[in-house]
Image (cartoon, rainbow over all chains, first blue to last red; front, top):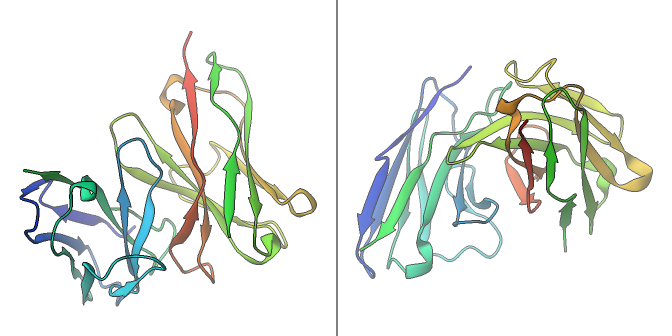
Length: 108
Length: 120
């Protein structure tokens, strides 16, 4: 099983600033990496797939990068409703298509 | 618009059986994999398994194989997650989600979740 590790566990950023979230895979997953946003009390929402492709309707403030085992989600111009937990997920090899443990993004 | 609508909250006792549902609309239900994800209280997302409604091909995470049953009725455009004997540790929110294209793809649409509470 591929293990996904996210860092940091919690990130506190001021509105208008940039947030940088990291995700590592225990073995290469090429670019088969997705990022999801889960706002409090809501279902997750797909933000990024293929490591860097924004899903439909996702603002350009959200960008993804990386390949192999190291990946980054960057959120520019942080807004109050970006308060959420962000999960990465690999879909290169199953079972399962494992998730990271999540990064909680707090707004200062 | 793709919609996945899940059945309502359930409160059950240990040892009872349960089947929850996920009805899809707005797309060709039989042509896309649907997966199930568990989220225990205050915890992260766990990928459980998935089904291709077109032929009922099913894949499981090793952690969930034998613990749950995943099925689908293409004529009703509905997928199901089923337990034969619930445990307290099954208490969680369960999400269904549509896989974007082929089976090696992320979830691009999610249901609203079904909360299951198992308590004596």
